Amino acid sequence: MKSRSARWLCPFGPSPSVVGRRILVTGAARGIGAALARQLHANGAQVALLGIEQDLLAEVAADCGDAPWRYCDIGDPTQVQRVVESLVGELGGLDAVVANAGIARQLPIIGGDPAVLEETLTVNVLGVYYTLRAAGPHISHPNGYVLLVCSLAAAIHLPLAGAYSASKAAAEALGNTLRIELRHTGARVGIAYFAELDTDMTATGFGTEAARAILGRSTVSGVAPLGPAIDGMQRALARRSRRVVSPYWVGVVVWFRGIGQWAVDMALRGGVGPGTEIARTEVVPFTTDQPARPRKLKRLA
Image (cartoon, rainbow, N blue to C red; front, side, top):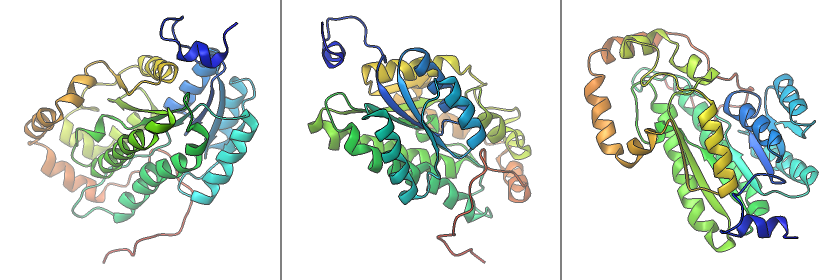
């Protein structure tokens, strides 16, 4: 009988699966993270969860066979290191980490609150780095895998989404760099590029008066179902794929991002001025409430 590793590596055997894979998912309380954790568990993976919404995390963990979970402020490097080590210990090792935790909030570059950019970068960039730093030693083996959820915003940048786009472009850069740095260990790195999926983040992020003034509707490309994206992530975790996209057309846009950016620039000229003015005074929350932490930047006058 072949070992799990042999079945995983053999290119001529049955299709790769996630059965028995030990997978850590960040931002697992809702949306992509929660749906992925539940589906991975249903298909035989062992999952561990971290996030900041404890009641929701506990529910997801219960649905995943009482999977281990921890509260974790992803922007706190000491806490991330401690929590990851604890969860890896409970799993008995680690085969993959899904760096999914992220937040979004609209920000006009001129006249916007710098705290929005600071907090977005803390969670979406530093949080990814802290996660990779903590989990990296545990997945640096021939079966190891990292999957970063980076969004189509890493390639195509919309008005008022500068903070989010900058953070996702930075996360993409971290992933591409890590792929090279891990190659000698046999571990692989994948990046997920998603358009507007049917999640709370999409509903909250685009559900503002300013966004509607610019777009003339609630989203750019229309809300896509979450299921195909989760299926794609599961396949990526099984095959250790380099790229995941959803919907399918996102792959074309990522390859031709220069043309895509030009098309966005041309299409959204009309409402940007009024929408930006609205955004400067519109009070909207982050897509997920964040724990209080000391400011790293001085507030600008």
